[in-house]
Length: 435
Image (cartoon, rainbow, N blue to C red; front, side, top):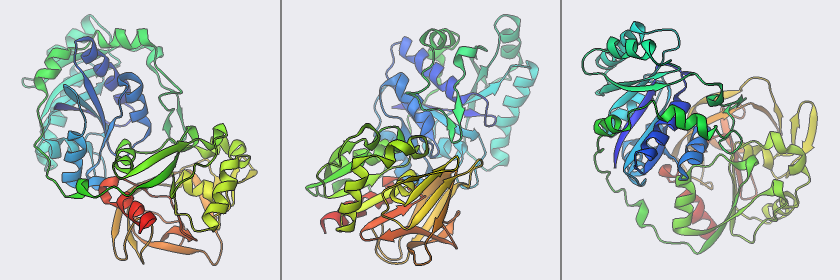
């Protein structure tokens, strides 16, 4: 499957809208599109899925390693893969969009905000192409999409300003119908803020799908690390779903289904906790559904099962839900009460970084001494009991408290760190359930 990366000049250039317009243009030209996202984001991929009706692949060299990134790319299917970048093309302390393009050896199409420029778009694109060597990246910046560009003389001026070797692939017009509302963790989720079909089709009409396909390349084949051959466990894993627990990587569910039976349940909708051998509570927006969660029978059942030793793993929003209370706008809402922590929502983010943890002893997701790489992004502030126990020492990133992460109680683990199955964390979770 050939691929191309859409890289931005910075955050806020409209990469998600440009990606969706490119996807629609390719679909209209008869191509099957596999979407993907550079970096650890959960929100932008939800918009990809709304347009393609297929899960977006997460591509992050920090979370997955180079071989894991390539494997995840090749697990996708379609005629062409469109990878939405993160931040600006070269931005990122441990992983960038340029890293993803280089690992896959596929070209970059630069998304440039052209709302107030013509020749400057050419200068910007040339600078980003030449800066690759300065930054030590072996990547090809091969084309440009002009975001928020008018037609006629404006579009012609941008096309003429591009130097040789940079292909003009069209424009996305300024259109209020193409604006996606945002909230504290980024854009609203795809199912909440579906773009106007008419506006998306009009934007797609201004893009050259065939020239983009001509630029796309096939990445190198991945190597096999042997993980796919691990045996089925016969276990049943209950996975929380719905808007309060929407932050889970498609590859995680795929991996769980390879080795176990997956039963989803939505506590906010009143679903009961399924009969299971372990529970996974992903992140999401529990703060937007705190009242419903406080009344959820599934959490009451979960508290009893956790006290009896059922393995339970919660990430970020899952950690918050497993705690004693969640305070939103000054109102405290009772949560499951499994972990000795209370959390309170803040006006500003409390952590945003790639993370590395070292396990002090065997826990649900790691053996003693193992290191797990992940990502954290949250607006909640935790307060833990003085006798709280922790699973991890923080090597990189923020901590729950005093350089410690991974709250422990019974066979329950709660952490702010989102991990990818390429780390082996979910294999360890499955093995612990049945070992």
